[in-house]
Amino acid sequence: MAWRAQLSRYLKELRIHLCQTSPSSASTRDFILSNYTDLKALNPSFPILIRECSGIEPRIWARYQYGVEKSVALDGLTADQITEKVKELVRAGAEVSSKTGS
Image (tube, rainbow, N blue to C red; front, top):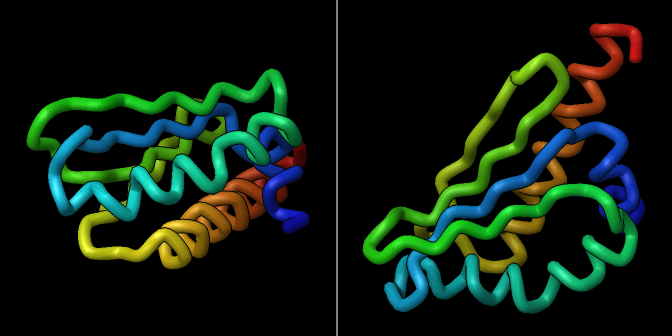
């Protein structure tokens, strides 16, 4: 749970791309429904952008300092696996911050 509060510390933005109706985005929709409220409550001014587009492959993007971005494909992952991927993105942000001395 501690990683949720670190989101705004190590990331500049989190973008989630998904399809509103496709089965490949079902777990991504479940992840959003079960986690968005908590993430925003712990990081009220942090931008979490949800982009819906018909037929798109679900993917999550993390933007770090200096415009560095990482993305992870979410197709075929469960909501719990997506949570693990977000944790990994936060950890990667901590590494980027430590390398730049911030």
